[in-house]
Image 1 (cartoon, rainbow, N blue to C red):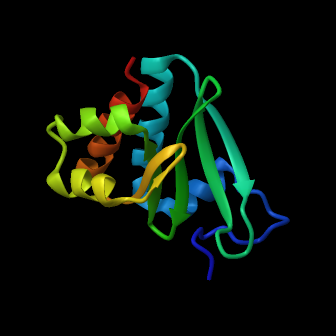
Image 2 (tube, rainbow, N blue to C red):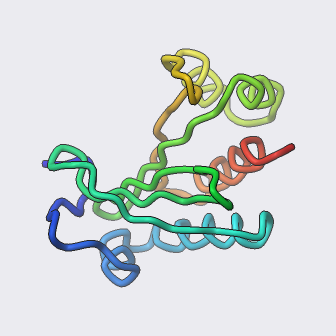
Length: 139
């Protein structure tokens, strides 16, 4: 079983397929997309097949900057989110839940930053992602 519910290499997912699989959580996916576009002016979506283990994952870009990855699952989705050192410092000073701060601090550091995955099943979880986007894309 792949990380993504979409695991057939020859079948690139589309919005209709995504809405069916995400169910009621599709509204949170749409809210995240609209937030990036409305607040930061540019949103590019790119489906990428990462192999049988990962399946199809949706990348969201603002201009040419990677914002996040969406990993579709049955009736929910996960977000893979990377923050650099300055953004992690802003995160620590934020009002976001302590478990998110802890996960970022404990995440292995790579050249692009620290990456964690968060499940999105509720409005509150979606709001946390919007706050993380603000931190990541702030100047």
